[in-house]
Image 1: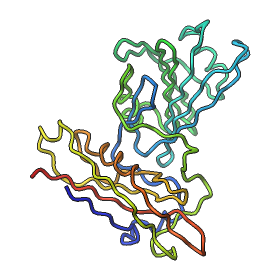
Image 2 (image 1 turned 90 degrees about the vertical axis):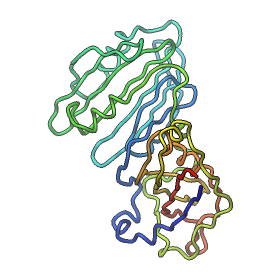
Image 3 (image 1 turned 30 degrees about the vertical axis):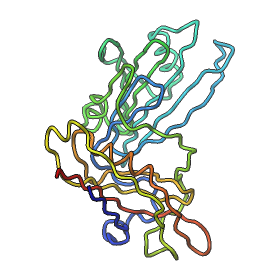
Image 4 (image 1 turned 135 degrees about the vertical axis):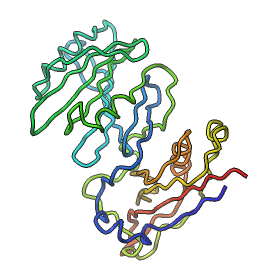
Length: 283
């Protein structure tokens, strides 16, 4: 297998409008999960993760809460994770608590079921800010899947909600904490032509085939657009071109393991857009 690394500066037409942007255009959807959680779901762009310990007056103590978020254009996709410590709330009680606190005028739409888990869907039909939320409960967690900026009938919302899976041992790319070297709002991201020295590779692991891809004789190229961040991390991964049977996910895992010296500009480390191409061929 041969992996080709191409600086994004070579694709100046594609990058001219996003040289300093942090949210890149969406590509093929990829399945993600969070370590220790009982869900997986597909996003059109790489999501971020923030974990907090929030004090709950009812419990007189804190509980773990997580927010997984991805933005693609005007649409925001979120997964909220809430610990459900003893004495446990019922799903009905939790939904009542969350909808009461919400700034949206959420109304019940329908009952849901994924595997052995039941849930409920609520929607806000505000024309200026449509939103749909789905609530589920597992043994020790509440999960709240949210799409804002699109109605439940929109294709992207349908794809997001239809991809939700619940249960232990979920497959997918592990979402990393937002604080782990990500590139946030207000951070300049440069192309190769805009830096004094480009990012320099130290190591670039190769992805492996999945058994399903071998069985189906899948060949081709996964193209990822990523940021080689000033922190030394690979961040903001966007799939420009994917492959089925888990090969896209294998490429993302390999990309995250890249080690490099960041680009520099005016004597300082800076973040830089780079395109990665992973070629999968059966020999």
